[in-house]
Each structure stands twice: as C-alpha cells, then as structure tokens.
Image (cartoon, rainbow, N blue to C red; front, top):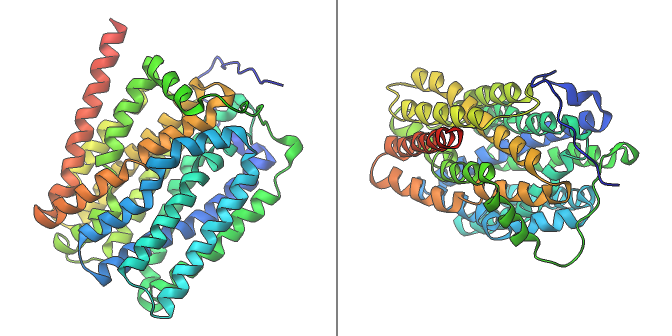
Length: 408
C-alpha cells in the first residue's frame, strides 16, 4: 500500500522525536557504535599513510580510490536499493565492511602493509560503501512514519557526525600505545553492534514502500526528476560544488597540523572538535519538520567562512575555535539537503535520490581530494583548506541569487 505524506502545519518539534520508535532507537544505537569504529579507521588510515610516505598527495589519492566507486556506482546502487530489501542489503554490506577492516588490521600488525596494499583495500572499501550507502540511508526512512522522516534523516546525520567526536579523538589517543593495526581491528569488531541492530529490527513496525518495478531507466528517471524540480536542481548544484572542494579534511589536516601548528597528531583532535559543531548542526536541523533552502544556504556560508578562518589560524587554539562553526555549517548543510531531498522524493525514488546526494557528497571526493593534496604539497597547506572555503562562500552566493530571483 502506498503511503501518503501529509505535511504538518507546524515547522518545529521534539529534537529526538524519532527515538520514540523501537526500530529507530535500535538502529541508531548500533550505527553510533559502529561509526565510532569507522572514524577510528579513517583517522588511523591517515596516520598510516602519513607515516609511510609523509605526502598529502598520497592521502588524496587514497581518498580518491575510496570514493571513486561512489561516483561510478552510486546512482546504480540507489536504483538497486529501491528495487530490493534494504535491510538485507545492509546486512550483507556491513558484514563485508567488517571483513575489510579486519584484513587491513591483520596486514598492518604482521608487517605486510604498504602503499599499494592500502590503495587496493581502500578501493574495495569504496565499492562496498557505494552499495551500502543508499541501502543503509534508505532504510532510515523505513524506521519511522513519513511525518517524522525528516527528523529521522537529521538524526541519522547527527549520529554519523556525532560519532566523529569520539572516533578521531580515540584514534589520536590510542595510536601511540597501540599502533594503527589494532585500531583497524577495533573497527572490524565495532560492526557487530550495527549487525545486531539490523537483525533485531521489528519488521511489522517498519514503513516500507512498495519496491520499484523491474525494468525501465531508473537512474535516468531520477536525474530527470532533479532536473525538472528547480528547488532540487539548485540544491544539488551548490551541494556538489561545496562537497567537492570544502570537505577534504582527511587530506589536508594532517599536513596543516604539522606545518602550521607543529603537531601532526592534532589532526585527530581537530576532527573531534569539528564533530562537536557537526552534532549541534545536525540536532538543530532535526528540530525542523520542514527544512528550507535558506537554512542550507546560510550554513554553506558558515562552512565557507569557517574554512577560511581555520586555514590561516595562527595557532592550534584558534583552529579549535574555528572548528565548531566549521562542523556546524557542514553538518547542517548535509542534514538539510538530505531532508529536502526526501521531502521532495516519491516513496519509490528515495533510494535513488539519496544515492545522488551521496554521489554529490562522497563521489566528488576523487576530484577534490587529489586537487587538495596537490595544493597542500605544492602551494601551501593553508591554501589547500582555504580555497575550498572561498568556493563554498561563492556557492552560497549562487543560492542567494537564485532565491531572490525565484521570489521576484
């Protein structure tokens, strides 16, 4: 039976209202624990590569390999998630992600790790992640009734970004005594929390839309839908540009922390402080029943200005102060874009549109990551962060001009 969404008359509500549903509570708890492990691995990978080569360009290439599959396969994976059971798909992909983490951990601990091996495993991680992303995020929309879907999507962003508070900080503390190998193993074990949550979902309480019929041109249908919806089109253009150039923190921050602030391990702490702001940005967005384009535009400006300020921070304490609004603006932009996309999407197209936002956010990294790494190595670490902030600020201006024109 097709669900009909009736928009509520008020625009705000309880920040955590989705957690009154059993499935949402169980899913988000598992996601939180698992993603702390994932951020530990992401941070450990940057430590490992910087230890092996010391070049930001190599970090950029690794990030490109990890996210290139999202660019190539993301839209197709979204079509698959609209056609098949998202819970089953997510169980399979989460199991494969756990296996990848355990493999790189064992290779690191036994001394068999090297740059080509990291590249290969990052590519495999990217392939599985490209399939996992639309299935897992689409599953979030099935955990609550449609009236609370926007809140659930924002809480999903809050959990994803909130876990970054603890993951990088734990990695920064533990990498010294344990080494990167055991950090990879810890991430592999953390997937057990996510898998237990997925197996424990009450299927009779899920709000699963009818699957997309077989055949047709599902990806082109989604692209046409975005092209013909002016609100979504402008949002996707700005979102893609900002995501490409203003979110390459894992590429630039290790070198910026080393060159500008004299402490390469401060990278993990900067990410953790940024995540405090990210959590706040996600939760503020979660309070809204309907997110506006103006909210996304304003937070793009906050992100851009904070990026520029951090790039030329004179010391580490100033960088910490810039990190909070940097995280707030980035997470509020992501949560807002996801919410608007789902509000505008027909139920049988949610997976594909979520996949397109993932392609815009993660799939653009193979372009922005190497460019950012090259700027860090050949121009300066400050400019490798600051140029993204300048581009983000310009993207916010683009949205402002469109909003003024559409009102007129």
